[in-house]
Length: 263
Length: 254
Image (cartoon, rainbow over all chains, first blue to last red; front, side, top):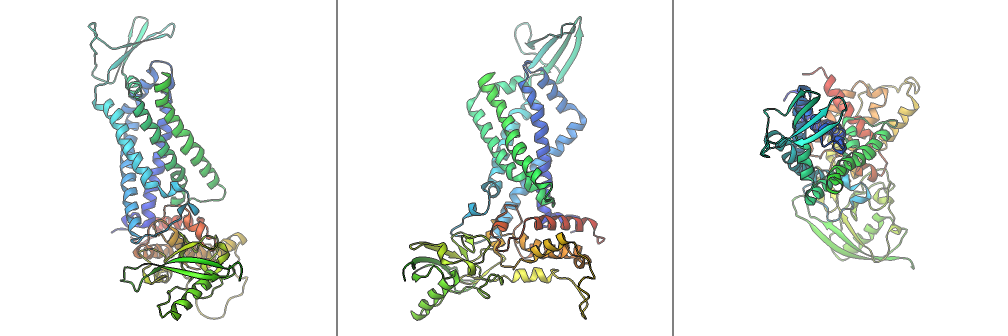
């Protein structure tokens, strides 16, 4: 083994992998939640649908998204592998163990919480990511009056009421005084999905899992990299609690609730 | 005497390394609240010897909280219910009459049970031997103030050097990780000028030995810090992590 693989094969190196991929996934969550806030816009999904096209066609974002898929898989794989290795470091367990006397339950449940999140990611990606890429998502037609700025929304249908498609995710042209945008209507897909109360429950529970996972995981990632400092660590813990374990999951959870109850 | 206690002990008994082991239940009577936990075990062992039975093997030495030998996992916690003490500093007043107390050995692949409650902690010795020292020439000690050391660094180094190598960190950790111990032994030198010449090689060697011994890896639960009788800080683990990463990245060896 050369030094590079030796470094990452060591116990500290394994933790380094988990920390780096984990913190990268945290930055993704922030981008994801900010982008998805456009779901709350009362514009029949125009902003959200255009954003979806941008996120799936921009070459830079596409490159980062492959890094993201890899990070999710690698983080999950390494996490489970490490959980197994750590299990066999204690072949005979204790008859009585009082874990709550010395540690927070989230820190002792990262494997379970992570597995719940992994299952959720599979469900979530087959719901939206797969549907958007390979499924039959209807198109929406937005007609913007360029002098008044008023936008008219309609489904993109033939005269007979059959759904029409185009060969790309988006088409934009000017017709007289109107700008016409025809775009894949992921917004419609989202609002349909979240009419199902069971699915909304699944999403909310998954956000609890993410919140608890990041309550420990965010600050733990910094410790694994070796960043523990009396000046900065309190700020890292603050961010981990209020942003990553409360604000981000709460905003995500608000989206299905909004579609189920308000929309 | 009034105030004395009657207790039930569930103690792990195991003949040798290869024996499977099991719990035995022993009633102990008339235990003074002022006895230490180890003295209570002495009373139990006297009785077992008088009854012609094998006494419970347990490690102990100084009985004043500095040798680190008294490894007992008591009611689900290393060294029992108090914080910042070893088993010899735990007194029976922390329990009440009628209590059942479960006593187990440290559990870790790297700490095999020798007999009953005594475990083999020589894995720690091998980690120290792999680099937990500074190489100095013999001869007269140099003048005490010849090498200036900042107060903060000296304090942090002393705090790390408080580690008595008892293994409570390993015992408490859900992963049986030895990182608090190893990081304390690395930090006590990493913070001092005398530790600098061998700093990189030390962390590489000691971490390699730690991994070879079969300890788990750290998931930052903080259980070790909470259970450490000497209050060794988790910040030492962060220092070890960054020293290790830095040493790996900057080493000239290919």
